Length: 139
Image (tube, rainbow, N blue to C red; front, side, top):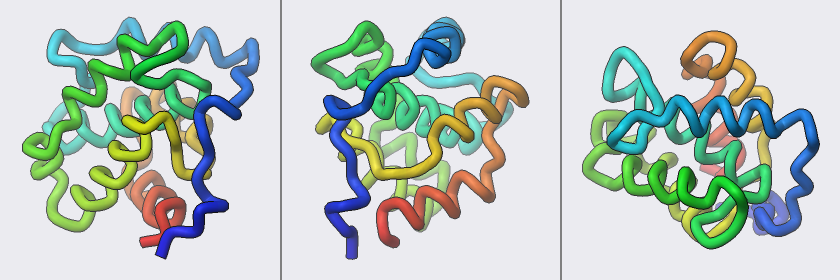
């Protein structure tokens, strides 16, 4: 069961000055279909979800923030059909996270760490990302 104390509102997130470069980098990397790059559909979906959580954690929602259009594009990219490429368990976790992000909320987690890994390596460390997301949403 999900503890409401583990969910944060994006409106409460305080963007730090050092995060702007990372946000701009991710915004520039979005592909024409709205997702992040990756070698496979699974990697693209995982990278896109990590970027989405970071954008929302930094105060951007579909309705507010300088990167709201990028959040909207990521949300469209991460529709249910695309999440099927993740497999059932990961698709369920992703769906919960996408639903929270669409509402301007994000599960508590170290999404900055994952964003930095994505920026440095062009993909997140998937095993750690999915472990952290499962813990964050209480699955």
